[in-house]
Length: 405
Image (tube, rainbow, N blue to C red; front, side, top):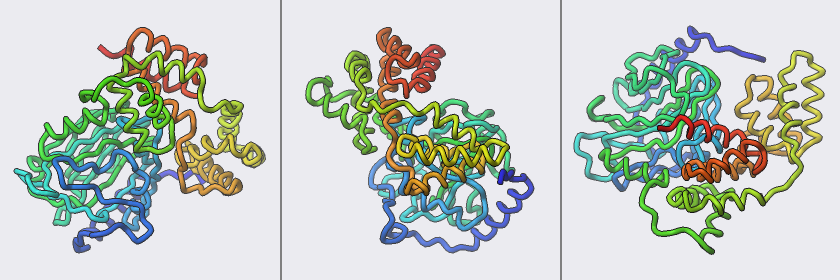
């Protein structure tokens, strides 16, 4: 069950699908992919078009790889994000679609009208492996040959433009002038291509008329724009509820407000983390050990771990669901999906983020504050004294603060 994708097989598949794709006529879809689809075409009536940022899941069922046979999964990432509260996690080789519903964004030299853009901005990070890539489709003779690469081109795509010598171990942002590099285009699809390693993370993918327009959008998404005013009292209490809630757009908006005023929020955040909204028994260590056993060599060990995870039920769901999407092997992912089915949970749906993932948003507020009190709070989280489920997030935040100039 542990499959490996040989480079020669992948390259053969790439050639076949690309050739087939070039024969398809371009038809701009005017409505979502079927009456039951939740996907909404990105608005293109302003200076910035948001392709991927928040509300990412409705896109996932549309990334069908155009019926091709590439391996790869796509899932929502709740904790390791660039902006807002969600990112996209893709496992090798890639997830893509050449003609997404309603896409038809025109790349021109001097954009002014609706649906006209010139620049693209994207944030990405690579977990393992040697390279990562993002690709755009356009209905012309070159088709998929609008590619940006960081690191090694592990699958050998031609006509790829390198934006960095190494794959990004931490989040990196790139802005490219599509017109200068490729001329007039009509973008109809996207491919998120980690190629190798464990996974690629993608976030904050925008099209814009000018770099200045993109800069404003990025500043707002990161909570680095000018705050509307101080944050306190009933407004802050309500926004905290949104911040740690399951509604992603509300959580993202609340996070931006907290980030704008982060140094003033340290005491408030610390007090809230000392009294978290969930106090269920911590079964995480046991569940993590059982998930590890799902990849053991003895069949009996894998079977026993599967049965035990099903017995733990509810408290195990978040971790099992995560491993079903991102587990280290086919066996682990298969058995986690099996557990979810036994629990009556859709193994293909990610569900709302768990309580620890939601609390981890507060860690980002402390990191942004970067005051001595904020660092002390992060140290307490990392040491398990506060919000122990966020310890790994706090350790990573402290490491970044240590490296910062």
